[in-house]
Image 1 (cartoon, rainbow, N blue to C red):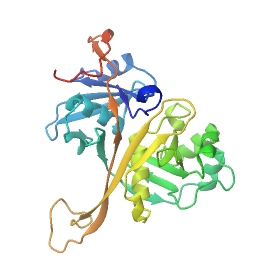
Image 2 (cartoon, rainbow, N blue to C red):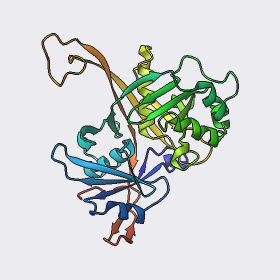
Image 3 (spheres, helix red, strand yellow):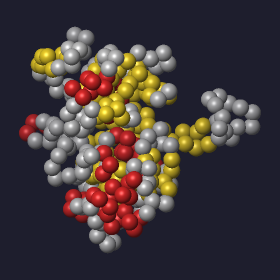
Image 4 (cartoon, rainbow, N blue to C red):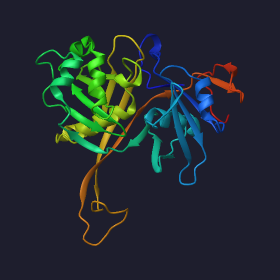
Length: 317
């Protein structure tokens, strides 16, 4: 299937987005299956039974098991919910439960957990030099620093989309910076008036590829950081489009919801005497998901048969 495809072209057709394969009831040796199905940058989501949620999920990419991110969650939810199911679908991920819903606009979104506010100790001068950002082209008033929504990402605001597209990082020093900051990726983003809030490019030099299309995890970090910046106008849906001239085109939608928790720091769910109310955020992020085809796989594993699925296909029909 394809996720977060950007609409465009004649008749509103969609340009390719991020690729994903969902395996229901995967074999015992999932690593062998992942290697057999390996396609660069394609997410493989293995869905298994869970005792504490609707399903448990493991994620693989490039034949290697990876931490579960929003791409795998939304792909699996699309298969289990079908075209029209709204959810919520609850997934067990590393012992916690993550809900996914299909909202009124038809897009799937999952609730991300922000584990860290922006921090300033990120080797700013070293990073800007490695990224090749021209002098004075860092945007003012937008989040700039390390944030995390499952994995640490450096949010780098660029003054305009043209400068963003022209970035040509030096990957050897960028990889050295990343290794010294918890294997952090870099999300360079710029305001745009092209029907979205921001264009973005994701650089993850330790992942073995020079550049990747931004996924929901890094966009969740950006949406949460925008909301926590203190500007009330930021508590609105944010649309982030992939900003490269070539490569997979994606469009992700996110929003932050302010909520009040009545649980004191370190407390468990429920009200305790003397507990203080703490403002916090729920961040939902996701986008469009569409089937591209169905593949039957034997236990070898080898590709056995493949057929395309029409737009009117329904799960369970």
